[in-house]
Length: 316
Image (cartoon, rainbow, N blue to C red; front, side, top):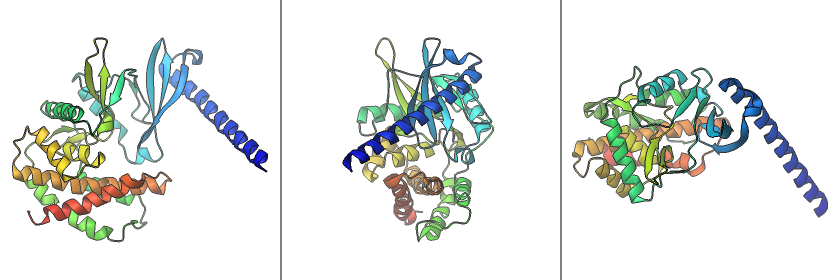
């Protein structure tokens, strides 16, 4: 019996390997078509990572390595690819993002240069975090403009509608949602500036890239959700993805404002944490309906919505 189970396990691995190899062959055809070259010129195709929105592969072409992004399940219901293209056009000379080679506004395929000597921001390393928050502040100060906006409360509703009338897994969802929408006026009344904002400015999207002289340069990647908004939303996004507690969140706010933040702005950022928590909770519920589960992260986003509403409710 044990031998039969072992053979069955081996057979399954062989089947999975063949499926993977077949997918790599198909991907080589796709990449070759995009780059207008022969398939034999596309080498060393490998799965790079499975992100929360997309799947990525690295490959070699003309002695250089690149990474191709393939939209994940249901992602084109979440992302406006034409708007994403407009953002990349806007930031291409800002020395902010990764090096774009190709992007398709219809299917969402994207190719960028692959950085061999790169690492993500460590959200628990103070030096990393300070550098990223300073970088984010400097980016916001460029006051870049695009023709579309990110509408936070509209997006909360939009992600909810993707469930197609299926109720939330949280029994108190409607009360939580009503509470969050009660924060909208306070946020609007305390917005000081509108500029291009990343919206998904989380630690995993900050790359520290080492150059030949070993100095690390920061690149901010994955601009899919970007649009015009109050830039302080990016502070909230960094915090809730890292699943920071209130003390850590206050430290991030102080980093961004160099210790000089007005109380109404701090409260507004708490409001963003609550609203963005509900936004990503709805996002996670939609992805869960497609068979993609984010476990504790998904639950924590809903808890941010509840906790930070309660934190600000008495201060509005």
